[in-house]
Length: 497
Image (cartoon, rainbow, N blue to C red; front, side):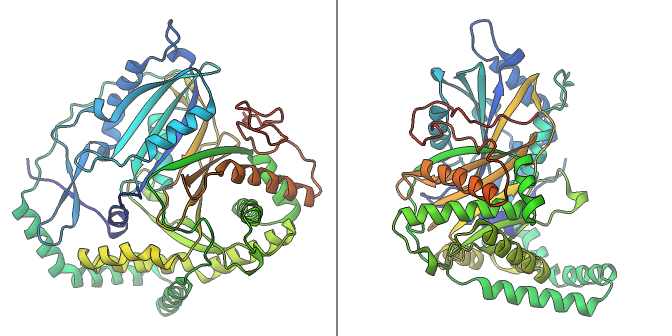
């Protein structure tokens, strides 16, 4: 059997380069299930059944049984099959003291997430957490960002889970790892790749010319998009959350019914993501004002990842993502005016095709030697082109099951980069938007206040639209009055079914 390996793209490699002792770059989620048929007679969870299901499905996710190796001289990373794969290292079992609360689960998830993945092993872990109150259990998963982006993460969710409450998993094929290349073979292939890059460029341009209806216009658009992208890479304003981050994290979450968000859209206009960014605007405005920041003078931006994944790339791992730098109008107090300005900003970004500009720059990085790319990536966060990250990924809108146990909630987790002490990730599932708020432990000790500000911002936006208050975003650990009590609030929004 010949040796086999897959070379990481420049974008995938950038997530390895960005990792530092205080800065991990894996993504993840905390999924909460009803115990259902996985509940044992003693009240625990049938971990062995979950382990068996993973073993039966791993062949559908080959990257989960591959490890990193590096080419000689340049040190470019490649994927090779792991000859010593052990699922028990990656799939772990733990418990909260009964009856475990959501506040305890959040702390556990933050501590699990803040630990770096071992680069000598396949870059993923999943923790089965039993002991949750209400006959529930959780699955805390983390996967290195060099393996997946948000969209491919949802693809993985639909591989590991099922839309059917009863499912029989077939016996998996035998795992036969392919031979790993020798350092000499890697060096030879890298030299060949460098020599043939100009030929590949000609071939890619020929393909581009065949696909484009107007080559000159398309080249002009792409050049302008690149120029605008480079122009927008200017430093954003300093705020208290934009300081060097530490190694520890706090994590919180909330939920919003998608129906309630769409009602705002129908009255005030904009896309669903525009409404989300308006809610984020109101939350940051209040959160920073409460900290004594004069928001009227801020150039405050969020980085919003934009998928450039083609329809025929569904199920493929790796990253196919670009980004927008969206200015948030923190100087505006009227929620409707905030939405208007965000809608105008995102429309301008769409028309300028700035996401394409970032993608072109990413493709150009494939020509850049690994050492130069590492130097550029490590200095990128010092420029601070955005104050925070806000990513919104569409997920399945039907109930999902793990061996008959219904998935109730799934809260996504976005990593922080240096000088960005707060990140927001959203995942829609079964009629509900699930918000995950990741924060540096010391820069944002009051992350619950930001979550409460999200709820207040959404309520103000609905009021401005002339809509009834309805159920607010659900904030576990706080009553509607705001005091912490460790219990769900009386006005909590139930997941849509």
